[in-house]
Image (cartoon, rainbow over all chains, first blue to last red):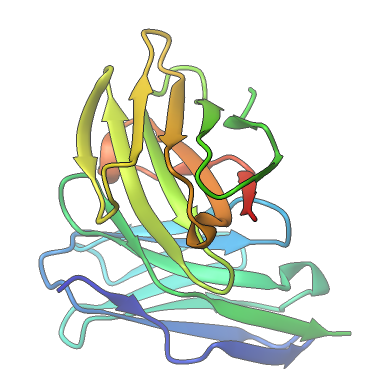
Length: 111
Length: 113
């Protein structure tokens, strides 16, 4: 069935380090993937997206990598800041306009 | 530009009651999505509305229903509330269905006692 999962529920890093958050997906037909950031008390906030015809996409301090061979998605955050502390979700377009979300990874950034 | 707005922000109901949650999408967005986020869990897809029609629904019982109005705002109704319905209910809108990012509101926190 459809599922998007995360390998690490919690990731702790020091300020200034680079962070990598990983995500596995199971639907090989998914063609669109998104990373969201959710801070306490708020709704998920769009970070970056990537389509299946791409392997890599860069934004401001963030990079998303897509490996379709092993159905793996990762989010890299450069020079992590305390304000990056949040729960990060990956999501895939599972068809019929439905995004399937993973259970999330909590990123903790220490000063 | 105003984002997705939801009301109310918090709600406490008793088991067996009914509740209506409201959502206004970003101006120009015609698709509205509802998700349930139970404590400690990810987002579970509930419903998708586009142009006033229900286009898809997730694995939820029929007591979860909703509608979309001509101005693209939407309501989510939950009948016969159960304790496990306690969750954050998130509404999102998008410009181009599942091929563009969903933009979320801050949700309605529903507590069923």
